[in-house]
Length: 347
Image (cartoon, rainbow, N blue to C red; front, top):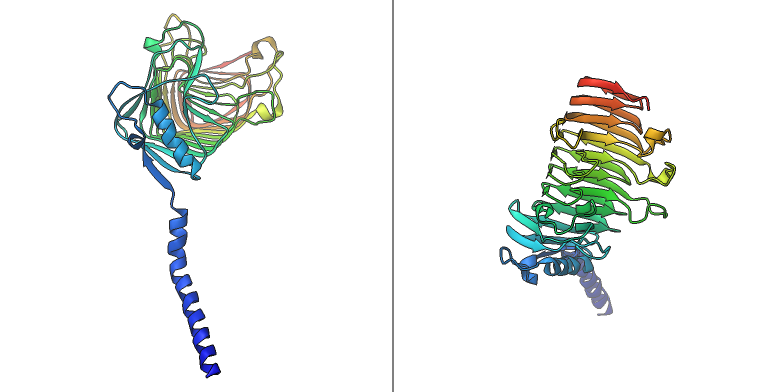
């Protein structure tokens, strides 16, 4: 009798173990399921002319607090407030994907700030911002000072994807990649991909790379930055100390630009020349030209303006068309390129 009980107990344990093997994957999938919310569930509604920033942030925070997931913003026009505060704007959390319809518009409300960001990516990891449009307020800006009103400002963050977006009409840059403090131990941003975006008519630069490593810009259309210097399509220009000094961790490394078209304002504009791409230390002209970028690869691009490599090391251009002048201080490898005019800078 005792032997039968032991056999029965062994069979019961075996059955339980078999069930765990069968259902464990299901339990794991359920445990790993990420949050998936829509901002309308938090009170953000399109086309009502009310400020939706707080509601969008509540949706992002709710997902971020669970460990990550998806925040959706359906089609329509949402009014949002830009901010200069490190803790304000539309604030991304780690492991959150902000997914927008192609017809989602984040309409920036007029302000008088000399510096701001609309989407704030600061001190986070694994962030996707996909779809939608940011319409800035440069034509309705209420101040006259400053040049740092950014559509998306990414600082001290790792693994960020910006894809299928239109970013236009901001008081400063369309996208800015940098750091909160140029002289602390944080190394800016790393592993950033900007893919299939249209970035246009921003007042300073369309894209600024100020402190970033492992950046890929792929399949983008970049149009007519204009308003205040340097007015570049892409400007690779770290913030250096007085005297042109730059720390080793401020040098931008491993930048790839491919399958991208940049259109500039006409060179005959009264505001001067316009650069499709510029790599520069702003002390270069007085003989203190320290390297600001290393390993910059540019492939299959059309640049409708000037290109300048004043301060980049190990820069290569392959199958690139430059309709303006290529102005260089540093040596650049050119492979199967079509360049209207080459000019060596002797300053």
